[in-house]
Length: 309
Image (cartoon, rainbow, N blue to C red):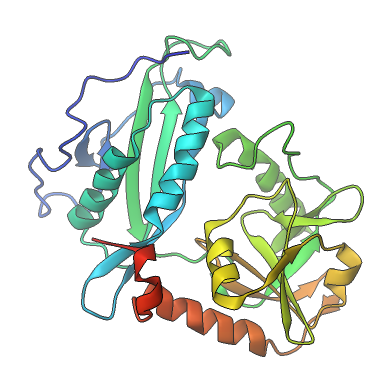
């Protein structure tokens, strides 16, 4: 299946002049930097009706050497490439790498959240993607932290996570309606976040973050085939030497500490799950501080995780 792609100068993202005095916010859109406020998509955009798009959440950080760097950019874009391939959307990781760096520079962002998005655009209202124009954008904003970096109260969702044999655990746009429903239900009951479990009581993940627990000083990463294989999770496994395995909800509730992680959440301690309260979180704090030093370029061993801006 092929989609129609725009004929735009996609490789040289800095070819178009950038007047940073005229506009406050810039986005990379279909091959060039444009004002974020002027980019438009048609009302028959396929992704708007059916969720036919793929995105990533990526972070850039000011580093201690005075520069800035993007955390694990190649890994994020490889995951995005897999999602784009499933939808038949054209995707060139090298092109998007250049677009990410150009957008950060145009917006003069150092600490930033980065959102690349590829989607099926205009072309009618049927489910078939053939003939729809493909779009690609990159936007950046000053950093905001999912779950606000605070101790978070979590409710167990009555909704199930999309099973991996129905929808692969990638960042496909339509799949996140599942997270939205779970989070709405949890917040209606007074919680900050929702936790997915499967029908057997195995823990899956939160709406946008992977789950870890600590018991007697031992860190365990929750493993489940329906969970997104998080890039931050992978980094924390490397930093902590944690064991990755299946965890039942009952075991999670009996843990000494629980925390979640993700690009936006970073490392967020959990204060409560459905009335089960957790006390101090010294292991979580120590790992969070170590991860923060990695993000700022203070660990030479992990410098290869950072792409300089």
